[in-house]
Length: 255
Image (cartoon, rainbow, N blue to C red; front, top):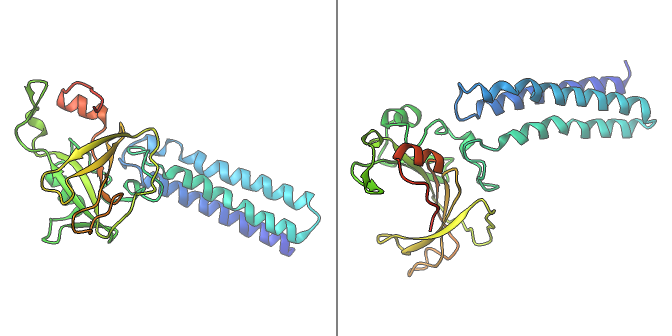
């Protein structure tokens, strides 16, 4: 067996293994591990990259006369299965997560569903809340907000079944994170929120229809600890469709 044939076989095996691993990771990252849709296309995620890799490898071996060029392009072709797997990293519940801040699909708390999950579900996933609170990847504080009793919408009280469910999950950066140069896509609608007990008092809220929010300070705090453009928090809440269905509130766009 020539060195080129050996390289071809080794690279092909690597491509196959990478394809299988990426398919498994993509299915594992599904919000619901029992969701059939998460696995329906797994054979294609594995099969197509392997077939494409094999065809490209054979063509390169037979058509290119230069051994270094063949091996170099075979290595380049091995990237294809990896790219096919990374395309699956877009989260299906929160597809508009900003680049560099795509947390939900890989988070341990991805199975928690706003307006559905309860305290028992939270402790099963995150454990009992300690005095230090929950953290995420050492850089974020994770706060679980629950739906409280009382309140109304359109003159009607909220359904009692919502009391005690997870209202939303909030990630607060432990160290300063600047969004000053962040450009939000058109999927986000911007409003201004006010907070009486907040150090700044107001912030820009960017929200999409899937319940994803980015809260960004629009000015600095008086002590200079917070600067304009600093990220206040990221919120994972119910989608507009789910909120309307569960609360009975009319579907009204943000003012």
